[in-house]
Amino acid sequence: MRSLVAVLVAVGPAVTACASSGPRPAPSVPAVDRVGTTVFPASQRRQVPDLVGTTIDGTRLNLGALAGHGVVVLNVWASWCAPCRSESRTLGTLSRQLAGRGVRFVGIDEQDSPEKAREFAARAGVEYPSLSDRDGRLLAQLSELPSTGIPSTLVVDRDGMIAGRIVGAVHVASLSRLISRVDSGG
Image 1 (tube, rainbow, N blue to C red):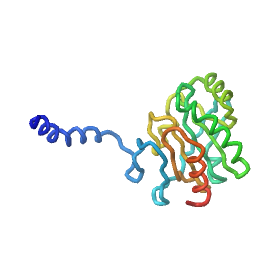
Image 2: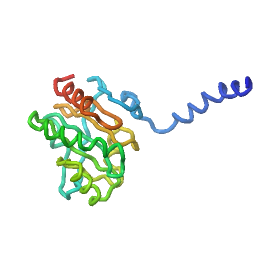
Image 3: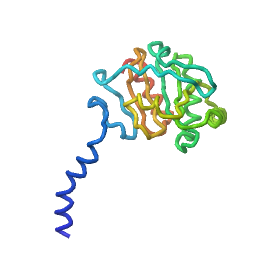
Image 4: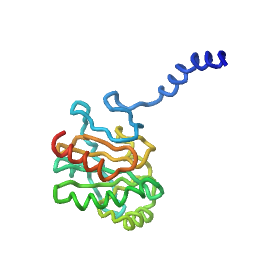
């Protein structure tokens, strides 16, 4: 048993070094694989990328046109994702409730056909636009989010800066608190 412990102690740092030798997010971005809510301090915020693409309804959308006009909630989802199904009604309801405050919601649908995505959105009551991202090109531009962990949500402040994120399914209370904090300048 002692020899096994000695081997683990000796090999542990090497395994950790190998696991961390791949591409990493920018040092200012807190660990992207941490499930939960993160509020980025002003010094760690960056401008939301100008994501441009076709929505699941076939129209063009430019996220940059929304940035700077109010808080934007950007949710990454897929019809085949079980946690996405559990959060979708919450997002649809909040988008309608907060529209009067100038909060806009946008989805990014990952690796879906537009037909399945539209059916999913209709069943969930999601009326806001969702960009189709069949190849992951749009998600790859969002270094604050895990490249394979969906659902994930970013909250963009009124200046177009990524101010917070939720990795994992959103809940009414946590997303509402994050939006209020970002909307009030926090």
